[in-house]
Length: 133
Image (cartoon, rainbow, N blue to C red; front, side, top):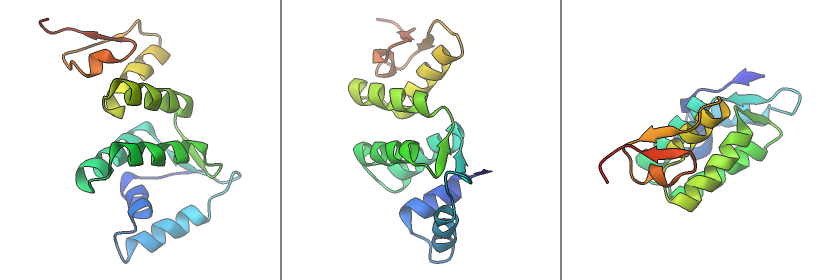
């Protein structure tokens, strides 16, 4: 198994660089269940941000990409079960995946919940709004 940096994953997913994208895609083509690519939570969150903010992909499209990565036999996504639950909650609450991951990872680590000043994130299970009502 070998870890993947955000720039390699983005080049593979977007195919936007004539030199780097083919190398990134070749790297992923060589992966297998016996020798998967490892995608950390940080790489995943950065990739989501780059695809939505930098490339203008819709949230639905990016969430579909993340789900596909989690289901792939050739990729190991760190905390993939948490990621899938966070995707569901982000979709239901209409908030960012990063906020849902913050909530779920805190609970997974044993926290009772997470406080936030973000009203939208406060819709998530496990989040408590700390601002003025």
